[in-house]
Image (cartoon, rainbow, N blue to C red; front, side, top):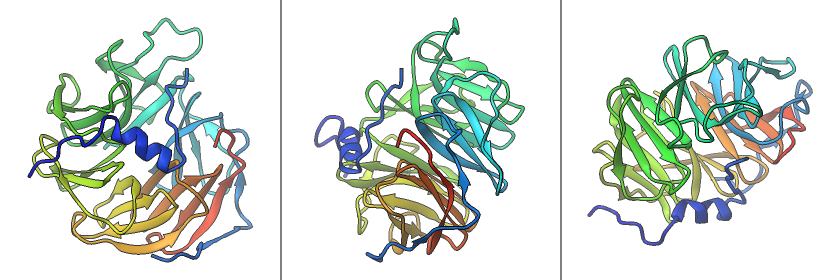
Length: 290
């Protein structure tokens, strides 16, 4: 049976449950985190970090004032030439995609639609939906792109690299991940638990999990979920079964995963694991706005 929205704006309810309020900006019960002596002070990062991603061992931050990066042991620094509000962000090979709002003083419309960068986030060009959509979540697999529109939490899909878009489903979603080996398979989070689609977002089915998962990241090795209480889980069978891994100290605000590495932003700290989420140390501290 396909899911229908049991209540409007379920994703917003999940955000409240997780202690997270997304604005337009204009396992184990023990906490398996330790303080790392090599943790970097992230006080230079702009307030409001919206998303995380890996570029090799460098950590990327989509912020209220542009795309930033932090190499291991180094202070964070700005990447994007223009300090636009990076609300949605994803990498699709050498093509990076983003959405959000323009920088102060810009003549661009308030909702930037889909942007692309082919120089690792330094410069950005409009692709589609300029002035129409602000994606708070973006995921991509080849030419197939999916985005969650901030206006109504609706899922939109593009089958041609983002040039044209159609409505892809009626279930209001909070976060979204796409299977790296099958762009028709999506996992989303809602206030009632995770949901899965095997038809490119047209319909979703409930995918029971042992905790209320808020954020997702899907790597070739596993699907990683971070629950509203900071519990970290993983599934190696597309969400059919979940294994509890470690836990971070507080509700999550963003997550990234790559290989055996997992990064979780919680309470102004980026916690990082190198063992698939079993244990965490602090990588970046002192991030304001969370």
